[in-house]
Image (cartoon, rainbow, N blue to C red; front, side):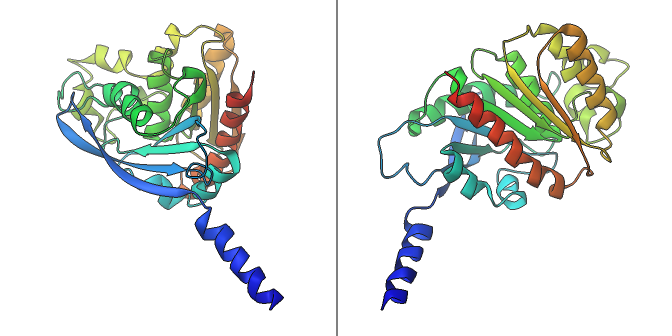
Amino acid sequence: MNYFFTAVSLFLSLHLFASKVDTISIYSASMKKQIKCVVITPDTYQKTKTHFSVAYLLHGHSGNYAQWLHDAPQLKQKADELQLILVCPDGGYNSWYFNSPVNKAYKYETFTAIELVAAIDKKYRTIAAKKNRALIGFSMGGHGALYIAIRNKKVFGMAGSICGGVDIRPFTNNWELKQQLGDTICCKQNWEQNTVINVVDGLKNGELKLNIDCGLGDFFLNVNRALHQKLLKMGIEHNYIELPGKHSREYWGSAVDYQLLYFKRGFDEK
């Protein structure tokens, strides 16, 4: 009989009080379309009136709103462990998360920094303050997380990049970037103004908590090292880590755990 009650208790703890995963649609007025998002709320969300900090997770090139949960299924447990709301928005096939200067249909900076945050704050019990919002992404999303957070410092207090494309200029023929920025000859300024390594020029020390990591076998390793060196020269305090691994779901699917722990500590600071 004791085994029966133990089994029932285990079932209840795993299923009734676990994190909840929703897929919602948010209307983007700037792009005039509905955009899907996965939202993970922690186990206590339904049982209390508590307000929660939020980590926004941006996917990579050719991905979508479901990619984070596919590549890092442990995010459901992380929401419970860290007591955070996790939001995974759709960022388009190749948006790179900026407002494209040549493709007016792509305004993913506006969506992420303004429309998405406003919608999540309205629909969920969030702590609606920059200190309690973090932006993280991998690959294209790593570029997006740093790019958007730096340009929207009144919205986000922390940003993290996992094997991010933090300087897109060496990759002019990759990932349909020219569709969003134009040719490098006629539109060179677009490339200079919309790459993270130049956007950091508008950052002052202490304005954002930054956590950057990259795999030692990643094709973005050199641009991450260059960004790290530039931040050091600028006197911008940041975390920078290189770990064994390549540009793969195995890498970012694991590295996200450390990023979220870093954010949690930041959220909890007085």
